[in-house]
Image 1 (cartoon, rainbow, N blue to C red):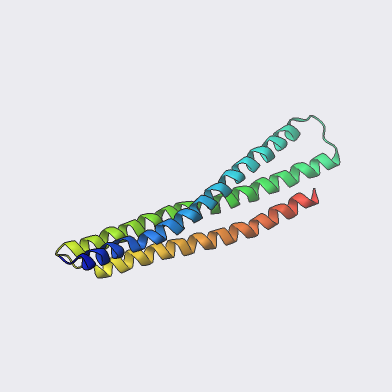
Image 2: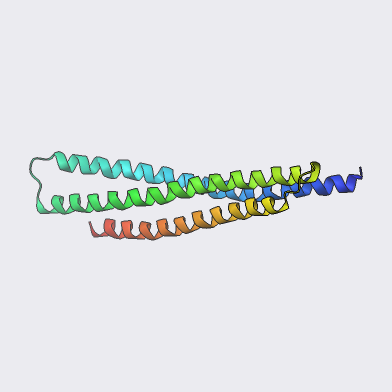
Length: 152
């Protein structure tokens, strides 16, 4: 077998690895954001619990409690978007890794898997696309939450 051909075939198999790496970088950011949201949720929920346990609250504390409920609700929506983006990004990584396996099988087996390879790679791209849209939605919610925080 020609060494040039072997090297080229290895490059074909490893090409989707670039998408795995870029997806992993996105995933790192998403998971960091998710962790920050969890910390923020705990802090707001603690403040809400403290205010809720008071026997008597003045008007500003009642307003703050209402504001906290709204912030926590929106924070949970944000966390849901980020969680879904994380899951979709993991699925994209699986899809890109699967594409590499299919390319390998296409080269070194009797099967012709060209259409399946294209579909798997496209699936990975679509999953990354949807996860990016979810993060756009989460960013819009973030702005809404900080607007609520500014008012209290």
